[in-house]
Image 1 (tube, rainbow, N blue to C red):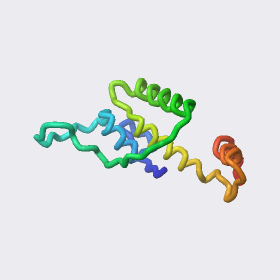
Image 2: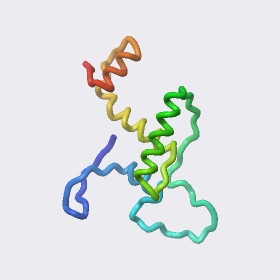
Image 3: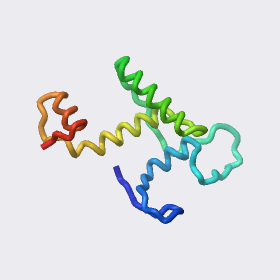
Image 4: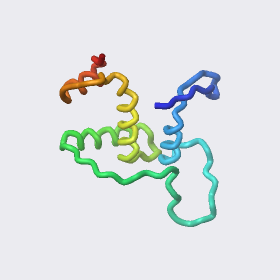
Length: 120
């Protein structure tokens, strides 16, 4: 996950994830005031997303619903979509992929490597 550090208004150094700023704009929690184009209707998406199809078990679907609800409640009044939660999950997994060994024999080894940090 690409991360830059920058000074915030209180002078502290904090991580700055450019993609998180895009999520803020999508969720309408960005501090920047949007410029009105004068066009009426739904504004275009901040950045394009591609429609995909995902097959989830009941347990995975319930976890997705719970996570989306929890983040939505924490971000009120901003909005949170399942697409943003999927995107965040993919970015988190991508960040942890360095823990995966060069070869694994089964999914249990993948899970142990990524959850427990038991890579090479």
